Image 1 (spheres, rainbow, N blue to C red):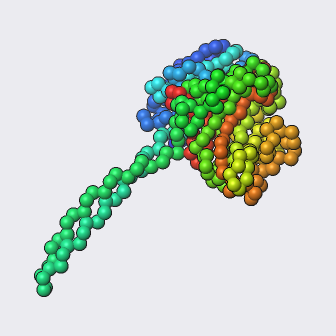
Image 2 (cartoon, helix red, strand yellow; image 1 turned 135 degrees about the horizontal axis):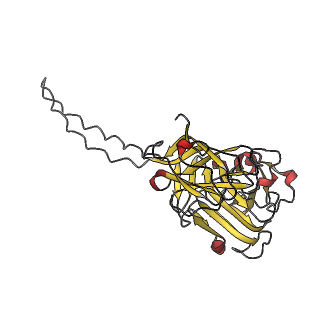
Image 3 (cartoon, helix red, strand yellow; image 1 turned 45 degrees about the vertical axis):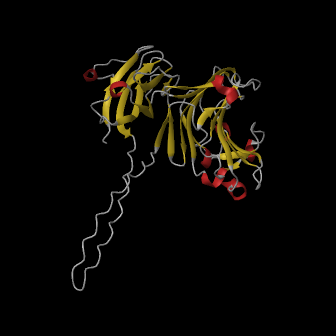
Length: 350
């Protein structure tokens, strides 16, 4: 679609003045998208801010999530591209945490759910019997109608609870929960402690690739953010680990660990500022073998470099670990995972 402006608080025609401290407004997008749209792609700009603050964009009708869509510190213009799920009456809410600021929003696209595949064609009917010497054979019977085909795969899977392939490790259920906007870890009072499961840290497990090989894992991408009352230097960011069999006979024992704060040679993976939603690409970054603490980050190697030796090993578990790292009152939010082209969108109200 052609980008179109949907809000400009500087212009009277939009009937919405600059957002003040703590103000939460509703913006209807019904005139810009079809009724089948479930999310929108937006270009978000803030300008003329009177001080440091942030905006949160979220679906109308849910509890405001603990997440930032854009941050600024002064009156200079700041822009960001965001994707926001649509809520009640195809609307979104915009919350300003502090100060006063003008907001400009352009819509550049929208998303709809994938449709089902068509049914298979029915079998051909049997041929008619040959007629007697020179006589034309009888017409064959009409074939039976074929069974309806299975529903085709969807590229987006909405995950509303933690009872299926995605679930908290049994000892960590107190440390993470499903919210309207994703899976929240914490808050952990001391994210640097590693003593008590669910209190100092928590682990989210995915079992959908269990039994397949590392070579079968073509792409692994996650979208997450984290905040803490102290600067963690990136160490508070969520970590992804892929566990696999330790030898050709299937014994357990190995894992590849991906940490955003150690991706210093890969700028597209090293974006780990607190309070921002980031996209981290595990299979394009560097990982370490059997080294969760990151004792030798300089010795990390690209994911692909391990496949020659370990590509045929069996995956036993894929998990996200948060806490047990750094940060006072550490909290993180996992919004979605992309595994081999399928997007798992987390949210209890999606």
